Amino acid sequence: MRILLVPLDSRPSNTQFPQRLADIGGFELLMPARASLGGLHSGADGIELARYIAANAGNCDAVVFSWDALLYGGLIQSRQPERSFNGVEEIRGILSTVDWQKVRGYSYATLPRLGISVASSEQYATHETVREYFILAESGGNDAGADKRLSELMDALGTDTADSLLRWRRRNSGNVAEAMAAAAGLGMRHLHVAIEDNARQGPHLREERELKEHSLKLAADGTPTSFSFFDGADECACMLLAKAASELSGNRVSQLQLTVHPKVPGADQYFGLYESRSLGDGLVALGQLLHTEYVYEDAPLHWLVIHGVQPQPDYFLTPKNKYRDNPFLLPKQVVGKAPLFITDLAYCNGSNPLISQHISRMPDCWINGLVGFNTNFNSLGVSAATLKLMQLGQNNLAERRFLLERLADDVVYQSMGRSQVIRYLMKQELDVLNFSSAHMLQKQECLNIARRAWLDWIEGPGIPVLERSRISARAAHAVQFSFPWERTFEIEASAPEVVT
View: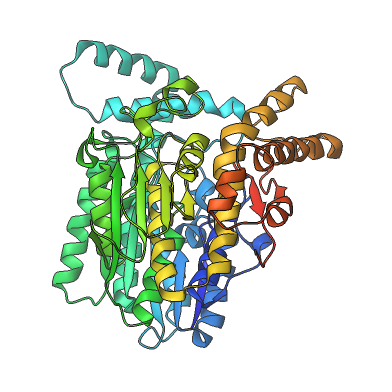
């Protein structure tokens, strides 16, 4: 089985993660060179990416691609109101040279987040202002305080900026609608609409409703293309790869033992900071998308979802004792004999290290996966995709490699190393969201800090976690780190190919 992927951009979640999942699922992944994908400061050549698909699709069983990469050059560029973009019809013309009756086509497009793109710390305040403006502008309530705050935000932004922001959202949602029609006209299998990092209130909810109505009209016209809608963005490549591999393999319904902790608040009442849907709705949507059935008795794989307190804390904004030292988040026992795949939603932007350490002290609890790298549905989508491919491929070494990298990134760097790197950069008077101008020695020191945090953990509190993950100390010591976008928000942890 061979699948071609043109992901959203060059971040690890869109390049490294899909490659690891392909290894787990036992199929070959064809992907453009990373340097040809969108970055933080410059977008990809979307026309060239479309031509890459057209030139290589015939040698593959399926194609998965991001419309945002082809239209704007990447996710960051799709959030820029002033940026020019390629036309959907131009992209469709190139893709029409592919025989989509023989090659299964899966694509995804995003409704943008409420805030603008952030490429430096200076832009963060504007991002937050724009986010708050959109939330309040769409509320339509009679709250005098909210109306006053909206007026203040309008004054801060200015009428011209506010108008350009509204045009930006209309532009992007219009492009999503055109992409849906193009996918339907070409005869692709599926198009997924990602509602990116938003909130329980805002224009994205109206835009999604309109696009769902659009999908019903396309279905009424007899299109073979199916559509789905889900919060997130960074999980989409992994989800659609898992969907494509599953359908190529016969589309068998998988069974997962599911445990959600804590039980109060229930999953149907738990919302993350950047989602419009509840955790319960997300689990149902993932089950439908990836043909997965949840059971509550023993199954070959056990998915443990730990979702934290409400409202969901953020690593940067909330005192650590609210999530790290909260016994409410640590299950007293885990019922079942299957190895655990842990999705840690204890807080945004990282994994609580106490959870894996706590579980590793339980008798007969083995860990075969962990994800907790970003927002709720980023982590949930990657987890569900990984679990699906575990059932297809059963490659234990590939599974352990991905687990090791997630422990190094999600658990240690995001929760411990990143704050140390941030403090160092601030002392050096460098921008934590863009330290590309730093001296090579300063960049190396950032990597040294991350590695020291990792070594401290694997030689101390992480020892039982590695043992219960069947990962050797030698393999853990071999993990290397890099900052692909030269900002502290994400790091890439890379483990050796063979983990024993």
